[in-house]
Length: 231
Image (cartoon, rainbow, N blue to C red; front, side, top):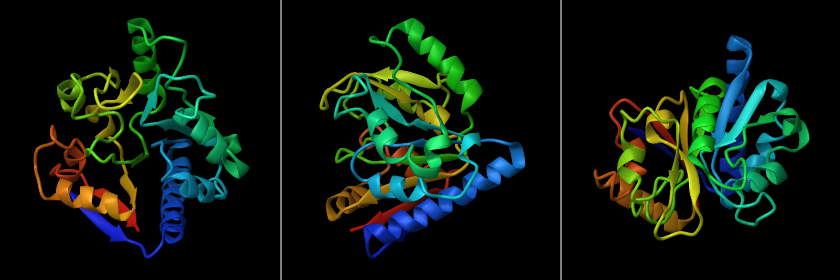
């Protein structure tokens, strides 16, 4: 299910989300000596990244990765890896480790197998997952238009990562599967703007995850997805 918290301004959201996430990471480090977090791309999380990067925790024990990535060069404007390096792996968070989803020039079957093994050993279960949401209700790179969406949302899928080729968006993608993301200990949906509020309302008022994949998180009976929204 879900819990919705609305903020009067994005700066308020950024501060509260950064505080909440840093506390979770700090607790995980103290309890087990390490912590992992997967974040999402786009322009929405930039302010949150900036505030979080200044949190006073032992970042050397934190591994950061992405919920999904476009298979593009790191210097591309479309690269989420570049976004994270320029906005989150800064200040105190510069000491954190980064798990690259995009490795090599081509997403081959062999590369995918190697990444699945490494992600399973290094990251899972994630201590924190920060999701975004597209206008079509996709999250990570679980696109309703893709041929891979059935496997992507299959809770019995034993793959950690998968290749996705959306039909309504550019670039081949690599994405964590729903079955791997659903094991995350703390799940947040970070969303801003009136347009996204409309999409969110539509997602909450329906129950078909294949139409809007974000519903797989919002309507799951044993999850508690924390929605942070600001205008």
